[in-house]
Length: 239
Image 1 (cartoon, rainbow, N blue to C red):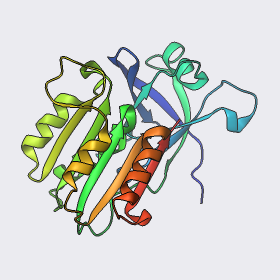
Image 2: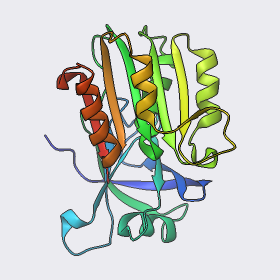
Image 3: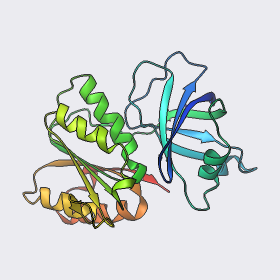
Image 4: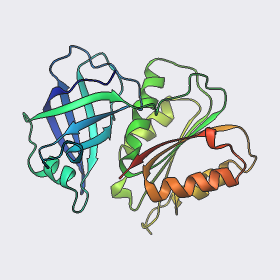
């Protein structure tokens, strides 16, 4: 059964980078907002007369914590009606209409092989939720690699937090890689070279892809060319 539309109140907004904001939303009609890490909500924004042209979906960036508040991290798209409305019209205290949780982009029930979380930009949101959930509940897991691609270091979302998680979670490795930052001392280039290098031994793996279509399309092709089955690849498309 499809979730009903509900009212959410924006409790906090933080400017995270030059073009991303973090929004905290309290779902007032529930005491507890239950969801699985990796799921998303759909917002119904007053930007068009047709219903389906008003809907914008965003992965939940926070982890289930027993409260009725969730966090979304949203990038301002040039010419994007939805993100422009959220950035210019929505303030702390604003009400939003939302539906969810939705989606099947969740961790495997049986974590019997290494997991590669591959993202660009705000595509890190569902992975942040998954990682905090695993750590807080002490859930056993295989080796997990978060490969996060951005242009510049200033574009990296949750960088300090992911570095801290890497210290606290045995078997978790955070690998940011930047394509246009000559001063960066870490991995340079695109995300694809990172997982291709790590998986030179072709060991069994799960792949989770989240971000822009161009990255996901290329990753799917490269991963299958490496000999992995398409069923090993799970994806959440942005834009």
